[in-house]
Length: 241
Ligand code: SF4
Ligand code: SF4
Image (cartoon, rainbow, N blue to C red; front, side, top):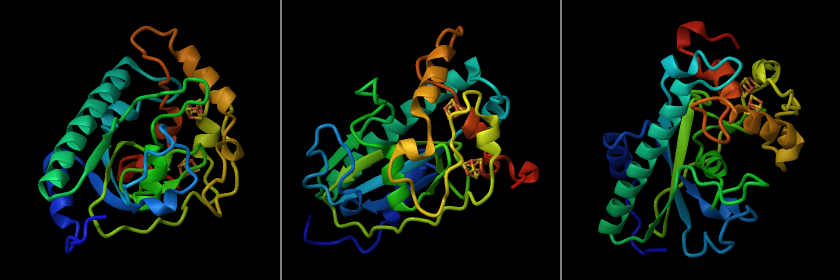
């Protein structure tokens, strides 16, 4: 880690917001020990991870009640492109401060069988305190619920790290009831899930995602129904928790 810690991460957060991020926070990557990465040594030399989120548009998400829509498909791609742009700018900023930076692409599935990427942006965001792990293993933020997309930049700069939030799903079952595949197990929310299968029937979920591909204008692995259903993400005047 670089020897001269920054006094705070505010200049970084301000810049990320100027470039289009709606949320930004820093995770201590030692809290991610044991997480699967590709390559396995991805986190070596990077004690911090900057997690950033862009809020998906409510006008796009509200109609995603039983299947993804073509408008959501395009929005999803546009937001991922914006996140990659933000991560590139943030990496440049960290490097201009004398640090090393590694931007992880916003959406790049490396193993299609297990549905994994270089690193789980969601796991980083949870450790950075951007939100908690909801019952379908989605990230739920207090500000926008799960209606966000995420990106990560690894760095060796000694940025102050944030702490994880408590899970606030409680007895809510909106996503469980909305899931067209019946894939969400309605697991206890006392802690973050130790394994994905504790919370989700991944085969059922991925099976549904693959069937969505048959629809025109819908790219692989898109659903969004549980994301749309979560009351934490609904516009504030229509929330029902
Ligand atoms: S992504 Fe779709 S199929 Fe998978 S858990 Fe969410 S609602 Fe169910
Ligand atoms: S819909 Fe309810 S249970 Fe599902 S992630 Fe959101 S708050 Fe948690």
